[in-house]
Length: 342
Image (cartoon, rainbow, N blue to C red; front, top):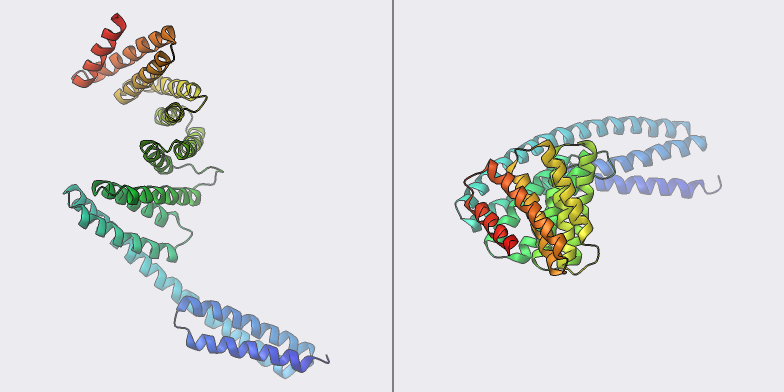
């Protein structure tokens, strides 16, 4: 142990540095980290002293370790109790703030609504710092960003609305990942978030980004369907996602657009076999077939287009049977029948 004096000096220097930090840092969380480092240094000191034959010094170091361990437990309990109280306070404030923001939004007072939502965004980020492994904080941020993107749209701030939609999708993914044990998170809020991002890119004719978003929507919808086999809503949602993929490909002049559209139709047809009295399902099925007919007609595939127009009319008639006073749909049927008569 020819270098023992140097080793001993180094250990004592480390302990002195941690002790000085412990006394100077005000944050309880930082103090907890420093206390762990001080504990480690004292433990190593005791081991080194015992190896060097300094029994009295080693005993003193071990006594100090025992004292520090007790101090650590007390500080940990205090921080946990304080953070629990703070998290509960932030949670209560969030629900009140979102309710107030929603009221302002519904009253068309959009600037004030945005300020309210933005204040709760900061509060929820603080909540996440206290509860980083709980999905609730991320899910609440997802909800806030949903409100923010709607409000920014009302204020005609498209760039800020897009940013909020992307953040909404990211928070939805985080929440789903923490809540789910599957490889792809199973969470309908995440599917909706990716859908809205895709729609935003589609409206801006950024078809490459829209395709990426809709593929993520399909991945989540597929994971949901695996857990909810033959669920009508899950079938309808994945059908809608595949149709969206085909439409983005078609409008973006990408190849292989027809297959996802037909797959979307197939899933939607399966949905209506399980829930025949859902007018929305029948309306969308008619819309999908009408869109397919129009695209086939553009490509000169007249006979195939004619079949799809006929099937679209059939679906719309089923919808009208459930909602007989829908004048827009009645007009749609008349126009398609006139087109077929030519």
